[in-house]
Image 1 (cartoon, helix red, strand yellow):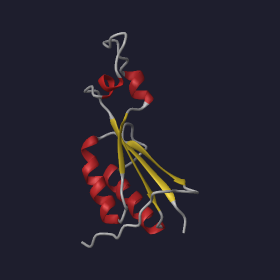
Image 2 (cartoon, rainbow, N blue to C red):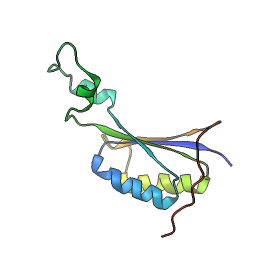
Image 3 (cartoon, one colour):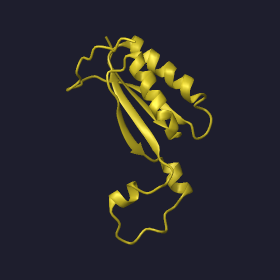
Length: 121
């Protein structure tokens, strides 16, 4: 059984709850969610309002348009397929600008991954 890392960066933050719900329904064991910002967005909105010395917390807590990066380690190929299909259904065409990106990376070793029984609907 192959183990994979599924990474999804979404631009529309309002889609996050729907994606998390769909992934849970698909059997994804757990998801880590990070606030993120792509370099293209940084280039589009250069910050000239920051003081010379600024804390990372100040920059990260600003009201700029951010993305969410969701990632999960999935051991079951069927669950991976359901999760990627759900993301495509919710987000739509990834070739459209400012939708996000999704990719899968093989995982050769992992620690701390707990087996979780899927919830029954």
